[in-house]
Length: 368
Image (cartoon, rainbow, N blue to C red; front, top):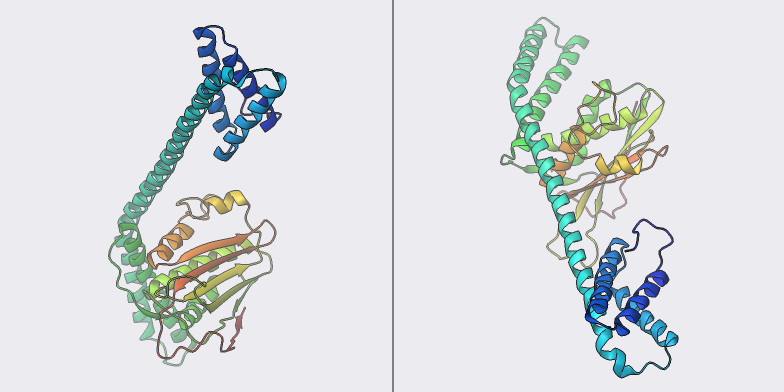
């Protein structure tokens, strides 16, 4: 048998070996010699799969082997070889087909096992979320209760009253986010409503500003005035918050930029008319970027490249699940040293206030 790891094995080498098998089959003097030749042909068929030879090349190998046999034996009559060359070809082809089927079954089994493992991890997320939700809400209740008591002691126009409003607003959002996490982990029914993405992103960034590193400069550049989708507001907020925090972590303590964009994208030509246009939300950073290996696993639950205690590895996996539930897609553009760009495309909801995406409007908002 051929060594699948040998780099010197080529199509020409395989054709030569197959020609030798044919010659032994043609000139076999007894049934045992013919059987041995057929066994070699069967082994060769399995080697073709191991060497990843495409099916369309198998016929070409047979043809080349016949030509080699003909050139080596120019006086060999057709009547002598016609009956005997068919059997090796059938053996090699059947072995190739069986090996190909086994290969597909192994790949399918590996895929099923991977999805089962992911399902188990997500189940663990649900168990974890259910366990902490009650205690977390008790903590939020204390924060809200004492902030309301403190609010009564401050003048209506004081800076402290203004800061308390942010604390209360953030606490309400945190309560919504833990409920959203439970919904995602337990696969509960959603209650989507029309959501205007541009305003919601702007509001989310206002809440995030104080928690991002001082060196991370945030630039929000929506290409449209409004962009509506069908979702829960907390879903969009969670997506934006997690992506921005992830971008800030990629920048670290260095000076860097986080760019958030919102635009409309028309459905590709040739797609069904019933398919909606898209709202594209993008979050880019000029941080350290990701290797191909990290990109492959970045949406896996509990996968993280951060130091122990710095991250749970759940943020991006939750985002992936949310985007899928909203009927959208998410993709990553990243390379080491070139930053990362997360692109989320969600079905656009047509509202009466919307204008055409090619109207040329462009708006920018920058904050540091």
